[in-house]
Length: 330
Image (cartoon, rainbow, N blue to C red; front, side):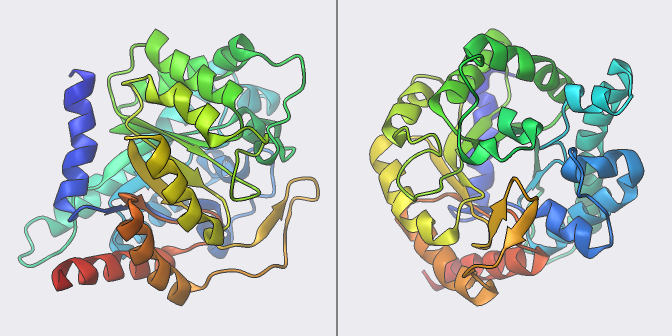
């Protein structure tokens, strides 16, 4: 399958969804709600080792809520991380593949139960294999600062991501999701890696933002998107795990800087302290506010909308419902 045809999978989903498809929500949040202990350097990926059935359960909850895209539980699942826990390279690779397998199995089970039901409003979801930033692996909060130090260059970042990318692609996802990328350097590494590995499935690259204007590193999004705009391997760009009150302005900014599909899935607005490993009290969006703003984000140009940390299936159900209702009203 050529990259143009593969990109069509994402565009077709968006078209079937009436111009804006729904991404799932906070994965670790939902695991914790079910009692999982994930205060761990592997974060939600620890459940790949300890409770894979719970991962599938959460995927099914998001599908039932109306998600059109499932993101796998591999955000913080890295081979160095697994090796540091005493696993072999082969065992680590099997866990990466399992993250895709669990999402695909959940999607297929759900779709088999719905596709013959007349009047149902679900789409056959796509599975996006999550590739968290280098900072996510470091687990020191640097995905929100972009400060990797002078010893980290493009080649080091490509070496870090390469085998994980290869293994995830081999597992058969529909697309790739690079998440919380904090700087131009890692953006360049991701784009070069997609080219070097000749990846033939769509991908998106999402940034975080701590000021609502720039990448966490302080570099402008204009600089970062210039790298992406030159690649036909990247189908969509956007923002994840940033406060929701930043999203409107960032969509408007991105619309001026790129012709790529725009994807946004903010957190609830609560602030994560990467050093103390806890959520700080702060003003946040409830489901009613997501209901109000999801339509505004779509009208501003976002074609993929979901939630990140501290959002739930209830949030995604709200987003899915309001987008469907607004389409029927048009």
